View 1 (cartoon, rainbow, N blue to C red):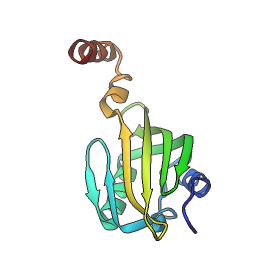
View 2: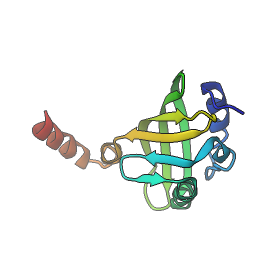
View 3: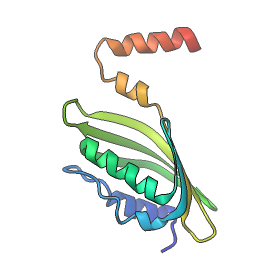
Length: 143
């Protein structure tokens, strides 16, 4: 099956549910063995390492869900916006807003995935009183 925005929307919606841990096993075949994954905290090269990262995230979360908000495709690039909510064992649920750019190789597999999100801003927004201090600090230092 060749990855398109329609296939992505259908298959990725099976990955997450509202009452349990995610299962990525059915989407791993869409990834190249040479996948390069990068986000705000890490860069991972290779499918084995990518699968291991997904499994670590599953272990850390009591529950995880993702809603795909918008999706577009231009030739070999699929870009989508999402809202991911992670429920940890000892902390309140944490919604993260972000986007993902997928690059598809000539075989139709994902060769590169780049996730964009503001990890600390979204986490700090959920901490009463600290959220205002954090936003004030950012405004004072960065405009």
